[in-house]
Length: 132
Image (cartoon, rainbow, N blue to C red; front, side, top):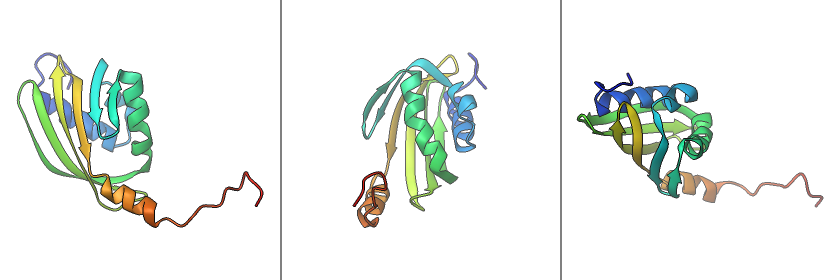
């Protein structure tokens, strides 16, 4: 669905389907080389850094459920819920700008509370590399 005639919503949905289907290579085909992503942890610049940001989450992803998706020729908003290995309910949203079928900017938001709650309630881990 990349190309000049593709709407931003088409691109955003194809990208979403690819990464939630764990096809990171296909997902990255919708990402511009000079992407800028503003995420809760800070700004991510460039396709390589963006892939490094997305890959660990894709690895722990179990399922997704689309909540809503809206867009026009240049901008799209996709909101979804995810189930991951550490947390059952982790909602997220991405507002993207698309130029020539590629996502050039992403404002990525997700609820960090479920992950922080999980970390806070996790039992202490034993460091097996260090003798007690």
